[in-house]
Image (cartoon, rainbow, N blue to C red; front, side, top):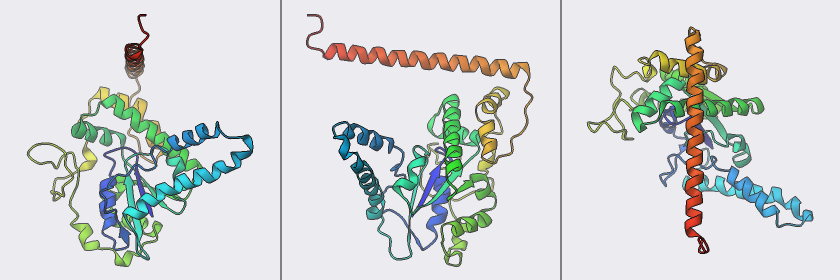
Length: 303
């Protein structure tokens, strides 16, 4: 089983998935589980086990690992049944999220895990163009996902970290490394098809409707996904450096230096204060809305 995780949406999971699909030993799902997110919410399973144990006698607690193992096993079976692999085949799965990635080997103990990362600015700009993301929120989500990957790397050696930029710039070399990691025979790979591989889901290669789609589109000569955020303003670059530069450097990226003047610090401190205030008021509004709904549904209210 080959599991692809992306640092965030727009990080190249489609590209890597399509490249690996060209290998005859890769089996894909037949039930349109193109992004399965099976791992992303396994914290709910852990909460379920904790809540269930509250009803148990303490002498029964030794059954908790059995319960956990069976619940996790059922997740693995979802992929196995939706993509029944023949002998010598590997089931191929992808999820553009690293939520609960620390549980991956509990759920899929024999999996070949690949984590694909991409420059934060390029991911955010692509997401803004494709899905109307907000720059600030997207940068923060990217940063949190990067921290998740770094914590995962501290405890696990048996996974492969792939930079989208390396995969795009030198596809053959990087793909050979990936095939070796996944124990796939490189001599059986369709290298000719790789050179002609179309693009799916690009934020620039869109139809006349200017909406992102996942139909295959021929790659044009001027297609350059590595230059997504070259037009960013000084203020956008300030926020990127403040929020993401250190985590990106820890993932192995070379960070372009920036003059950290008093203006740089002042702008970022004020931006942090502004967004914390917005978050606080948003939470208050949610609490107030929830309270009104509870009050309105209470048959004894006002009596």
